[in-house]
Length: 179
Image 1 (cartoon, rainbow, N blue to C red):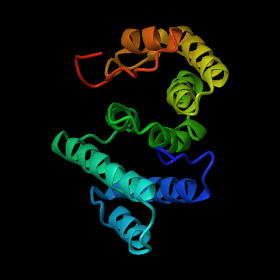
Image 2: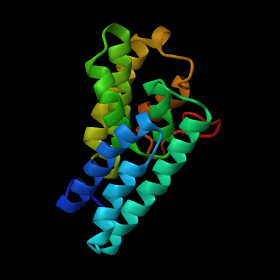
Image 3: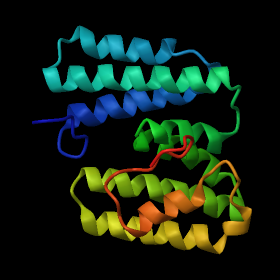
Image 4: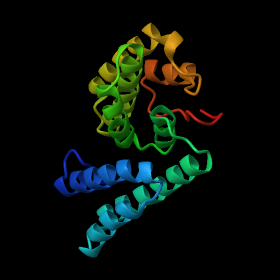
């Protein structure tokens, strides 16, 4: 196994889910202590190198996200999801926005759902599921296009739409100027 695949390996799925769940509360507290406890618990079991590397990579990415959110005093969920996105933490983007999506209405609900689907495209591409990725991308594009005037300026929509339309394997940076 080259990398930790939560779709084919139960331990990978458990690690991903537990770390992600802890991250959601850690983002609100601006403190990664809860996530670090989960990571330490898994690391104490002396997991295989693939699992260990996955945990370490996630913790580094989570630390970078939390530093950006803290330093820029970001509180709104869409902005926070963009920082997760730029670290290619697509499952975490889904986790963060799912609660917001479920509690929103109108165009806001559709925009959150479109971001979840856009993240889903990259999750599917990671699984080599081009058909699933293409379907997710098409639904995201449709929702973004039909609600374009309501999409907040913080999201570089044109950059994202180009990648989604092409089912591009290289995700765009959404908070920076590149890609």
